[in-house]
Length: 349
Image (cartoon, rainbow, N blue to C red; front, side):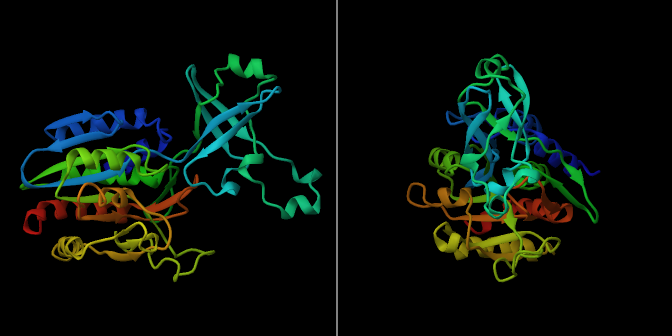
């Protein structure tokens, strides 16, 4: 296993729903300290690692949070009812094992459902909505659940572990966006001869409104920015290439536009910069025009009087699920592209 894969495994296996990114932030802080001049946490909870230099100032952003759940109600029998934090497809949740992050420590629970033996034909046709799901932690009553540490407002995350697959591919939870975090950490390590000032920002609460990116970009006011995230692929059954031309194993995705332009339309100056970094270093890349989903770059580029921003992503299958899949060679090329781009950013901005 490569060092980069080992880092991705540690980050993927850690838990940090939106607003509760502390454990992830701790890992990242330890990892980035050797490669920067200053590390601090702002009022919002964003981790900002700065490598001092001259002009321009470039902000590199990767969000630390993963999609999760939050307890909203505990019924008299001790079953937990919840709200969603981030973009879930409800059927992904059904019958998953979850971790309840109580003040007393981790508590395991399962999102239960009616067994097929007692389902009517109508039941089988009808998808189960998250609002009708519940979590069973083994409690016998509301009071018993309370003794276990179950309280309203407690966050939950998926109980899933990182595993290697064939052909340099790996699977795990929270690749959106622990892959971007790993990419950014390793990019800092790989940079040489950097003239610019670099602010590597590991942001909070991206999955619930790009919140950490908004506040950190306002505070830093960089000259240019680059978000590292993941891009969904169109190379597996159930999706057509016209929905996503991006393929796993064919190099980093460089965003041209996402959310049909409602997110970001990347400035031509940023695209020229990223393409030059890729082509001059023989790094394969794919251009992405996305219909759905967006990234921290969408918040950053609208900050103050506007910040030219772009996005680099490893192609990733099955995002926002417990079983995301990416290629380590793609992630390695993303690292190279981030590092090489920062090394020449002063020639473009």
